[in-house]
Image 1 (tube, one colour):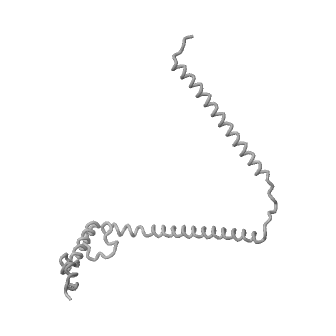
Image 2 (cartoon, rainbow, N blue to C red):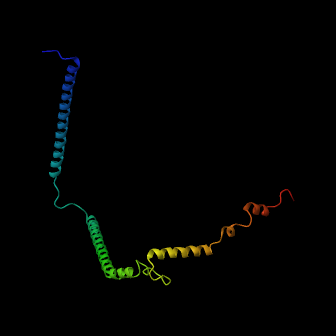
Image 3 (cartoon, rainbow, N blue to C red):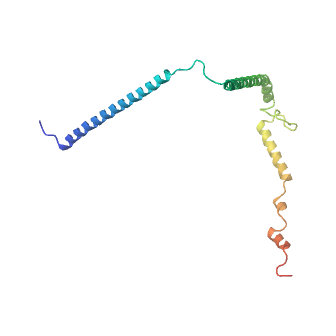
Length: 176
């Protein structure tokens, strides 16, 4: 048998150690898992073996409180069901009204040039005007109205600077 170099021999020794550690770890985990399962099984058997009295001991007041809580929960559940039914009926009515009004809305939008005439006062609208043209015209009219009513910068300027006004109100310095 030929002699192996030192590094190869060392590598094999390390691999053996790693295998031993891996096996020890797996065995330890298996023991831990078995212990946990036994513990859980014992707990389950203890709970299942407990005697539950056929007639639990409680006072009349405690029974009345339990009944009140049950009634309150039942009433709350009934009220929630009523609310859900009301909401569903409301949505159904709105859906039906929407379906009934849809042809009228479509006709209004189609005949009046993509929505012109459907929204408010259009007495001064031109007869073949599209919605885009109408919006631009209204924007121009609004800008003209704002320019006419807004004071200019010069009109908004105060007559004198605040410092000069303050000097005018102050008593003269050094005189008495």
